[in-house]
Image (cartoon, rainbow, N blue to C red; front, side, top):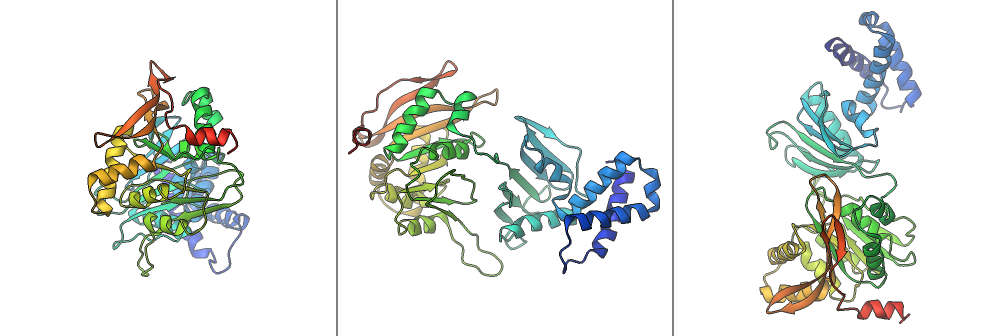
Length: 398
């Protein structure tokens, strides 16, 4: 947008806002009619072409009723991530490529308005007292916000979009993230109620894979999902309870964390508990749930490998409970059956790089039995499942 058009946009927005009756909710058509009238009355309108006028109309509407300059990226389904670094720098990830856009916010105040609109939609609070927030837009996108001056480059917003139609395991097979053989094996494990933990770095697709894996759960089971920001979409599940954490806010609302939600979920007669991601002391409660008869639980965490994820789980448990390391390792070995590790290759392709069974403890260490490993560009079988009792019982109808 040229500087002339930008100035007209600011002026038009100001006039439209002064004329909108917020007490009496106006329809989209009424707002657009008002915008048309305001733009037509502006003397500067004569300097614009028809194409520029139509673009201005759209920009003014987005500024007033939507998310201003980033709305076009939210409307573009090929954009998977939007990164706002202050008012001047807006980046997007599109078709796997990171691109700096030519868009910017007119002022820090306008960016603040957009941020408050985002958190207001999901009853979250972000302000000087609570400058960091996670939120979820009404259309499902996950949002992380860090306000200035905590963010030195100006208020920072990161928006991650998920497909409207969740990616299935069949689609992951098509794009080469996993082989058909490995997917069929995991389907058998999910149906046999093995406890499965998915690890991977940022952007490796942990939530996407967890969602695809969860679709193998029989539809007649009662499922409880626990997340910081609700993202999972379990198609067809009727007996589904979705729980979401809540941060403390300026009004004094009690914060509700994942740890509290896991404890509550245990009283809801779940067949399955799915924890979107464990980051800290809640690992204690997750492992206790897995060790107290709640088989078939699923979760994810940040780790560089299955072995590294186990070490991180040990640290998480220690942060929430002062117990000996050998006891923690015992909880991990008896609670988690299968570890799946995801990786992002140099060509941006996301793949399952490792599927391992937790065999048990050996010499005080959690022992992994590798079942599949990504080698020479493909996921290959490298071992045999040792703890097959649950699988055999399920497939024999016991």
